[in-house]
Each structure stands twice: as structure tokens, then as C-alpha cells.
Length: 381
Image (cartoon, rainbow, N blue to C red; front, side, top):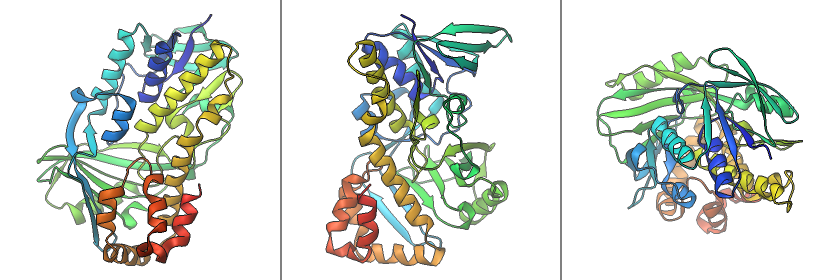
């Protein structure tokens, strides 16, 4: 039996390989970069609950623990959410990915860096190594975990448009920060998305913003820093794309399946994809194992994603709702929500990964009946 070929050694790809090994099956992971986890494009904000549910211990890569969030409307109205225990970790993504790599290799999984996929024909993968040499590798199944610009997604036949991506820019900045809270900013400098300040400690933070592809993101970033953080010293800025939209359907074709950012298994509210990508990797590995055991088929993967996709669809509906409002409407909404004790409600009920845990409760509360139609529409994902 040929191994499973996994293209991409990010969290989704490595978790798929690890779970496959735990199920008793072999894989080979191919990563086009020489170093797993580099370059680092992600802000690294990941929920504590999400990692615990995955049984992933991130101690080596934790830069900070976050207790809450301050969310600012365009005119500066703030909604503050605070918990008594950490709700999120700020991770060094390179170290996090490297820890997953060590775990994979400790289980005997072969991870080939500097190896780029060129083409797939049935069970044969054509790859190019760092030395420019072409090779053929056999694989029973092929997993596309190759990120936002996935080549495997193209082979499956899923096409994307520029509207399917958010362009982000981020740098590590030096200054004075409250290291207990992330800060999120809505405004014209981040059209259809937001800007953020994610503290690493009291003197360093990851500050960035995202907006629709095609906006003047460099100028918007300079203006944002000048307005909100005039005294900080920005480091070298890094730019990246993140998926923006509903999770893709039709992510299985013949012996190929997509996972993680390649499948748009990403939260449209924040752009975060680590937890959902790894959860989906577990589902995909279990599905492939069932095929090897002759108790299932690869197309079962999409059916098994129903719960995950329901949450991702809710994230997209929340994002679309905010995108439908202009700045003045967002300001008024924030003011009204504060008057209705939304901060206290979210402190008790909020969940950064699973909006289904609180959207339904909001819809049933008389305090929030002024937006009941919207809440019910989101809840019916």
C-alpha cells in the first residue's frame, strides 16, 4: 500500500499526518520551504479551549496569555470583554509548527522540506526538490494542505477570485502595551475587515490590519499606526493573504482532498485558521483510515465536516452582517449593545471559535430583540 501524500507542513497538514499515524497508516509530508513554519504570516492568536480540545500542548511556543479583548467601533466606542482565566495564547507560529514537526517525526512520519509539488496524475506526484531535480512519488491519496494559494486546489478544479482574499500587513512593534488584552479596530483603514494589536509582552506587540485585496494597504497601515499608535516603533512589515469566504464545497475529487486554508476552513470574522484546520485534519485522517479499513469512502470527509462547516458558516454570516453596515451604523450598534450589557453577556457566554454557543442565546434574550432578525438568520446556518 502506498502512503498518503500530504502537500504542506503547516498545522493542518502535520495534524492530518499525525492522526493518520495514530490510526495506523503511513504518510509522507512535502513542504516547499526549507524551514517549516517560515516565513511566519499568522498573528498567532489561538484559543486555549481549541488547543485543549485538540489535546495539543503549546508551551514551547506561547509568547503571551490573553484574558480578553477591546473592540473599537470607527468613532472609538469600546466594547471590552474580560475573562478571569486565559482565553487565548499568542503563539510564535514558527515554534508551534516546529513542535508539530518534531511530534510528527517522533512518530516516524517522513517530512520532506524543500520539496515542491509540480503536478499530480492519479497516484503519482511529480515534485521538484531544492536542487532542481524532478522526482516521482507514489501516493494512495493526496491531501492538499498547501495553504491559501493552494496548487492542489487548482488541480481539484476550484477557482478563486480576488474577492476571496483579505490582504494583510503586520509588524512586531515596540512600545508600551497592556499585555492582557488584544485590541481590534474597525474603520475605513481596514475595509471589510479590521486592524489589530496583539501584545507579545508589555513592550512588544504584533500590530496589523487586513482589507480587501486591491486596497492601498501600505498607506492605510501607515495612517492607522499614526492615528492609533503614534509613539510605537514598528518593525519590518510582513504581508500575506488569508482566505475570505465560506468553506469550499467539492473539496474531494477522485483520490485528492483539501484541508485547512486550502479548503477555506478559516474563520471569516478574524481570519484564524489554526484550530479549524487541525480539527478538519483529524476528520480527514479518520476518513482516509476508514477507506483503508474498507468501512468508508473519501467523499464521506465532506459529510463529516458538517459540524465544523456550520460554525464556519456562522462566522461568515457575522462577517457579512458587519460588512453590510456603514461606519455610523456600526457606531450606533456598539453604543446600543453596550447599553444592553453585551460586555457582561460575552464575558459569560462568548466563544472565539464557536459562535453557535452564544448567538442562539442572544436571539432568545429580550435585551437583544432589537436585532433578533439578524441573530436568527445567523443562528440558522
